[in-house]
Length: 307
Image 1 (cartoon, rainbow, N blue to C red):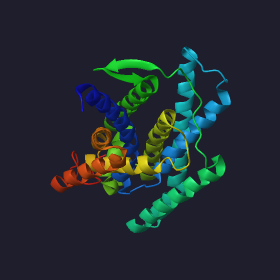
Image 2 (image 1 turned 180 degrees about the vertical axis):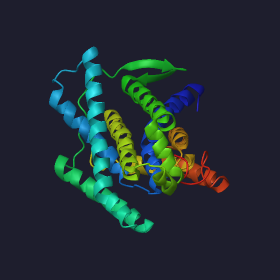
Image 3 (image 1 turned 90 degrees about the vertical axis):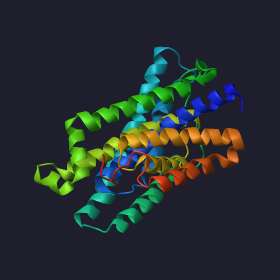
Image 4 (image 1 turned 45 degrees about the horizontal axis):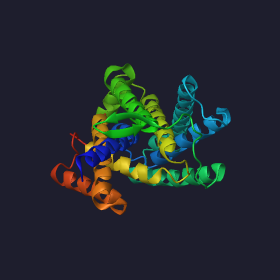
């Protein structure tokens, strides 16, 4: 691998990893608060892609927009994706998980419910939107936007990277600097004591799901701009993002961010060295090796206790 190729794949890995990080945050937020592996989060991500697709299909003219109109259309697509992702996550919590919490159901029941909800949602999307891939309407001319160490980034890649960084920084601020974040961290640390101190557990849990859904939905739209939207699109990114959350330390927001970036870079470097057939092998080998040395993940302290 030449130096220029190294920089190409490294930058591509950072872009891909930033998407994994945003998706992984949804897993780690819910696990931090409920110790629940919400495998239906991959379908929240998928619905976000469809939200952006439907909104832009309705408003974008036939010719490719340019200038400020492109910015407006990007904002519309991301807002629609985030809104639909947040709505689906809110519905999941209210319909699938809250009744189980009120009955003090075993953890295994939560896990089975999450898997069942995932199957239901992706089949529902296939029924509602069709089972063929659909491209998101062009919002701009996707030419080269910037060069980093000789690696050329397209407008779409810059959009993904900048948007992901803004969302991750914003979430970190919300979790560590706001009243809502204090409630999330309190419930993650000790829900019984938090309830005694006046924290509304149901409200915190619902807001946590919505927050993760907003980020997951926006990530689904960004993923769709770089490929296509299809009802099965959440599976592989969702599994990889879950692995990223575990790698960074599930329950730890900054760990999810770090884990996503690491797996994104490892994945692209694996493709560069051994080909696309080994794309996911390298990432999961790194996951296993890290967990053998540090079972709680890179930044994990106590599983499920650090929001």
